[in-house]
Image (cartoon, rainbow, N blue to C red; front, side, top):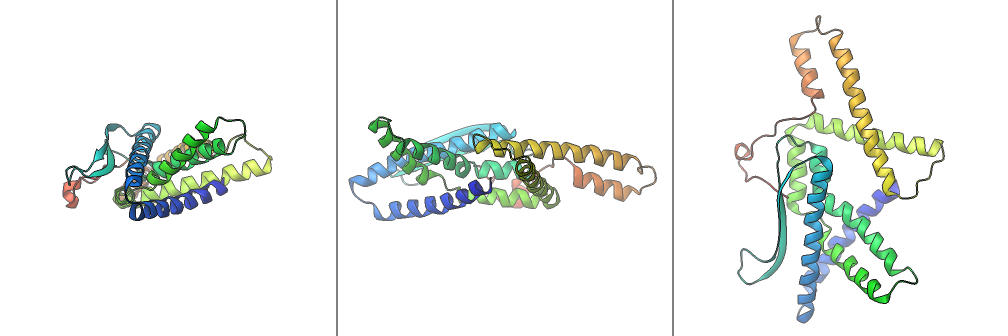
Length: 253
């Protein structure tokens, strides 16, 4: 489980370096090939955002992938975006959606790489898988806007954001301890992260139940300010600050 997290970081660095290398050093007809691969990489990038929105319960409003630049007419510049309903989104949702291209592209890269090195597969499909690996390198890195959204949503409610991070780390630790203690080996690494997600849900609603019991018992004897602080820390959702009040244009993926 922790090994996959390590590979996420390695793939992020490698993807960034490969994209910079190809974008600044490839010229002539090969540039056209790179732009086509970049376009496919952007499609995977935006579809990753869109898919993660559906998985974490954030409503996607629209998706767009374009080949030509909107600033310089006629210039090829693959780009895209996914617009979402930002009402009530949490830090964990924002982080998963923003990092979705890296997460999904890493899994797709290792899957494609297994096709390349598997014997008995048609060479044509191996070549396609090799080119697909390159497209993933060109589109896996989250954009500056993606990282900005993570920071922005965290600052909207730091206490609840830290609480979510704590639950994720606790769920990961408990999952690892249980699997090691009972010597359980899963067939696919992907299932480990499903277990972490299940553990997160169990811990979240367990703490909510315990919190309600603890809150209701002394509620009559506690001060109004302490009850307000408790609700503020344990609330499930928060109302995000409107972008125009922050003096910035509304961000989107």
